[in-house]
Length: 107
Image (cartoon, rainbow, N blue to C red; front, side, top):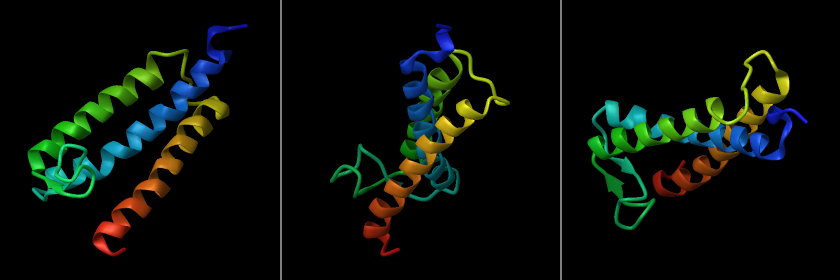
């Protein structure tokens, strides 16, 4: 069995997609100079953290996504299964975040 076909590679791609997607709202709000919820706020995930904290949190999420997607197994952008796994992780966290932040911002 090739290293890329092991179960943990699929799990890594799935969570890599989740971390990649989670970086987006933090990076966008941080770059825009707006506060936004992070795990470091009070209460965690509901209170707002300053823009700088959001930029740093986004950077950490991007680093983790990079490590999970490109350093575990052999990710190939032209391999449908690889892209679907990353996309599924991203879609799941996007739905979860829309629910979580929607309850905070009334959306």
